[in-house]
Length: 148
Image (tube, rainbow, N blue to C red; front, side, top):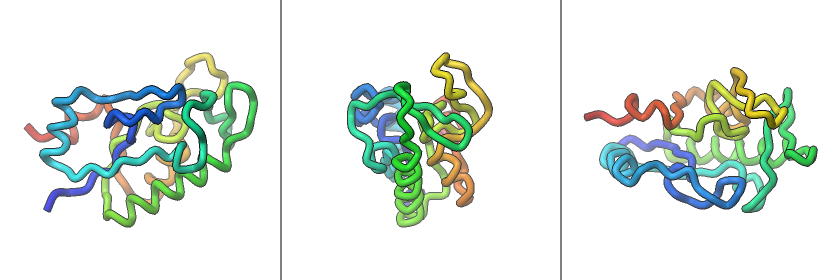
């Protein structure tokens, strides 16, 4: 039985990115991941009730604000809880998440100024998954997940 890997849906080609687009990994990379893992896709932002497309958002302190200044923290927190529930339901011990996302960013996110300034920190869902004991990876760390 393959290990289950929670993965940001946008990395698999789902059009759930804030602008309606995708952050799809190359097809051969997705195939290599599928060889080794049962992939469990999740988009915490849409799971939390945010539409596609939606205004870009960033974490500022303990809140998540859209570029227009709307507080969308509740939607992000709801999505984080649903992502965690999905990981627990399928027994995921690891997650491959979209880097720098206010939801999925693990270890580095944007600072909330919408100036593309990066700071240490986790997105809302990444924070919840890390607290629950999952090991988190970003798409630049695929070499740690795909065994040759």
